[in-house]
Length: 258
Image (cartoon, rainbow, N blue to C red; front, top):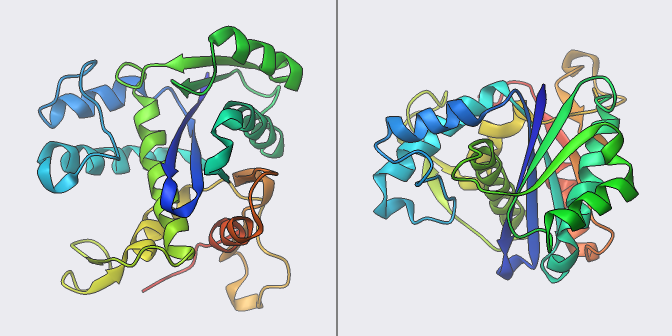
């Protein structure tokens, strides 16, 4: 059985919400084991991207553990306006249907989708919307899930936050440099743009539609079109946000960056 996990990251100053689906095997046991390894209490404590990492070494350690786990998963991103929180649940389900169909998952494998709390008025509302969209035909949608227990949601939290920060940088609203660190392929003391560092760690995980057409032959296959396979942009996004989302996530370079 394959799982989708969804969480969102809200960024008021950018006027945006970045949501993320993480897709793959049931991640709960592995994530909860990681929580225990860093000294936190599985089922009670969890990774929260909103936590101040400088004040929480356990959160920093858990983030590193989750990044390792993500290597076995695929991700897709949803972008909407911060003014559309009331319809985020609907967009999340529409995005789920889009990603499932674009990646030929609908009907080919048994799907379960776990969505974090606060997206719907009730599980009944989510079930009714799923039926309206047609998701019920091939996916067991489980809304209002507790991320302390459903560990895969912590992976989605990490990806959603990462996508949100990347969009803030694309919009010119965040400027932050970080050290390259060990195993980066660069001098560990070299300063990198945060958006670049985040993208470099996530780029191989994206669902994509295949190589961008018309690439130079020597680079064939290095630049991938994300398309509907990995990017959902809500109809309510203002033009500036839509443009930023397409610029940041519309294509993904998989070639050497060193």
